[in-house]
Image 1 (spheres, rainbow, N blue to C red):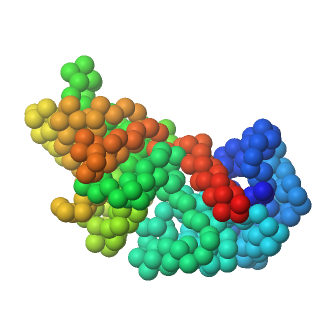
Image 2: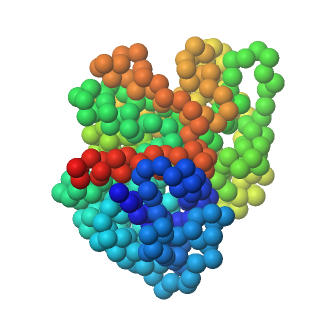
Image 3: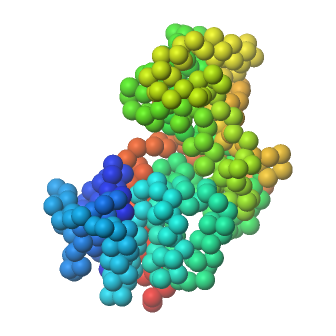
Length: 366
């Protein structure tokens, strides 16, 4: 069986995904995967031959040509591949609303979708419902493991818990590699740790490339909020960003500053604010962590919270993510921990979803 892939968005993650596909092709193992098209916002490369585009040394880039509607061209390539047999999978590695809006139509047309794009699954509830309806009313599949925790088995674990009839009591986690790094370094109960200024740690995180170009896009909690909404919806709770309480830890006077440089320059003026929060937690033997919570009874949220030194969240290192599922069957939480960001691990999650689709399609065709 042939799996035909159309990739939209060959950026860092998309390119890492293609590199992993190329390694898969070189191993000459099933399933056979070919890439029939790659599209950027303004260019498309396509090859409908049996082996598709050449992936070695990113040779496909030489085939990129200007396109007046690259998305439509990519969609046409996917539909043509589906008509040839096998399975056609659209892999959306963008963060674009316009691409996410196309998922229902693609699914109803017999195309499968794999994506790390959070917009479709954390955006308006009607779009989420339309995607579910399109998948349920067709033989098409949609997988989005990498929308939460990159390649960590978070959504698949949650889906298995729900499918087997377990009751979700609470899902709690550190879902941002950026905020994990910042607070793991800033707030610790270790007596040997050298106290650091909050602004200095944010500066280091920015220099390492851990933050968005504007660190406020991490500190405002919206990225974590999207992940909480996705988890809630998969758990059967119709959460929405419009109503989810999200604590923005950017000091109020710094939120309206238009210049990133000006924000970074003024952030040290608020180090005392963060020191007071940290000292209050430390006096109780606790640490600060920015967490997302899905709680069907007491309410879901994104907040800066205190945790005892013995809590698994308190001992987290580096920029890892950690997620705790408390359920009726797992009163002592089931914990998933590991790298929750990075091009290669995100691409791994996408590739894993692709292979799941291949296995499902092959099984149903027997």
